[in-house]
Length: 127
Image (cartoon, rainbow, N blue to C red; front, side, top):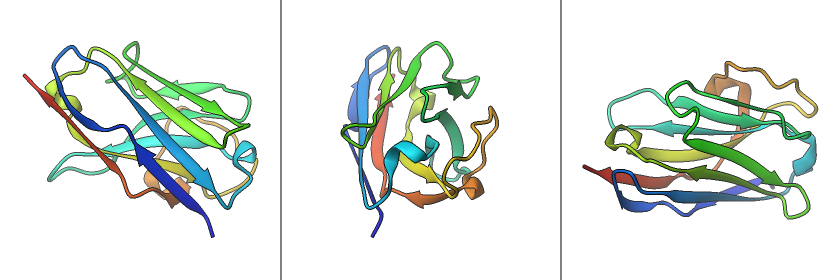
């Protein structure tokens, strides 16, 4: 059974930092492209960042230069370091595993490309 469990969310002031983690089990983690998405109330789920097995990464323009995605294949864990947070970053953040093993990482990603999801962790940035 595949499980993805996010942690590390919370309330932070604008300009602050948070580090999200996503612990995974039940899948050969290193074989999968992994990603972070987020969803604000009343909005569509949007792509944030993605990372391949070889640590190649792509980011949404809105977070480029502020967020860093990384992975520890030995610990089956995905991370998202978020710096210089803005109120518009407020959302529930989800980690996801691509629906296919050994998929090719691409700069544009939609939620439909990913087959396994965590339950989400809330990030709230106050102004």
